[in-house]
Image (cartoon, rainbow, N blue to C red; front, side):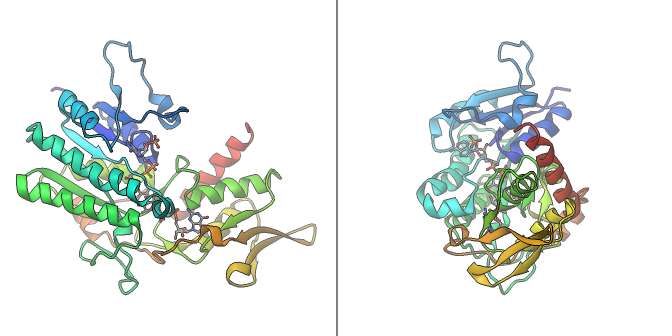
Length: 349
Ligand code: NAP
Ligand code: F7E
């Protein structure tokens, strides 16, 4: 049987790196789109990188950009993928308030460019996965969210992803394309970008533990998220394209923890019992060191957003039914793996 061909946009990101490994293991030929940057941006995929001069390659990288239709279209027409995973995005919610137009160009129009290219190239059998997100939800009235929960976006990021969600459905319904939305809740891992809250916390706590940093400045401690593991979730991205019919489906753990609880769990991992005092911007987290209070967490206004999704908790009943959703990693496992990885890496810094 001929090997399947996948195209991954955002292959250098957290999910792209895990998904590429999964598909290579499944014997796919994997094509990835990377951006030109002034410094190397392929650290997450260096381990699987293949010499471009090797004859039979399983991983092939192409320069392209989601803001540039000509690059996208030339790659799609050359590769003629069986499966396209659109993971590329300006994925940081706080940054989207600073760069709203660029975020929209990449996330919203980028998805449109890719879909239009598949359509124009008449690739009728190509399956398309859109990286949709729990940031589509935001109305506090709905405490638990599923596929039927009305959308209410709270940021340029969320709104750009709302367009991408609908354009995916539009192409499915208009042209009978196999185009699906995976509405994934937050997922983390040692490969998580360093400005997302979980990685920012694990990195800072390990540095404070090793006396290489004094204190961590953080934003909204009371925000609640439904955190899963990226390695678990990319398996279901693949599963979504293995279904008989396209669908829009929530992938979540159905549990939620606050940013504060995430910090507490990280501290517990290294034997610290963190305590809190003060309120609002004056709240601090401290530990006892040689019987003296040492402040290790401070709250800073700089990390609050102009608008916030305060609480997310998914209910992934459809995924359980259709995708046989089963997750290997618990909240504690995620914290443990991220902390252990940062503790190991800090030895080489
Ligand atoms: P990530 O680590 O931020 O990776 C984003 C990827 O997109 C990187 O490879 C990045 O390239 C690439 N990219 C950014 N702008 C681009 C452009 N203009 N042209 C081409 N590529 C571009 O994100 P992630 O956590 O892996 O998430 C993957 C996708 O799932 C994203 O679409 C995100 O919005 C969505 N999502 C994520 C979560 C989550 O919790 N992780 C949850 C739901 C949905 P560089 O490496 O060069 O920057
Ligand atoms: O924030 C709060 C912040 O930036 C989580 C992206 O992958 O998941 C991610 O978006 C929470 C928010 O992720 C800091 O206000 C407090 O309430 O880690 P985050 P996110 O905004 O949930 C969704 C599903 C995506 O689709 C996105 O692509 O933590 N928070 N203090 C902070 N957040 C950050 N980044 N930094 C802080 O200092």
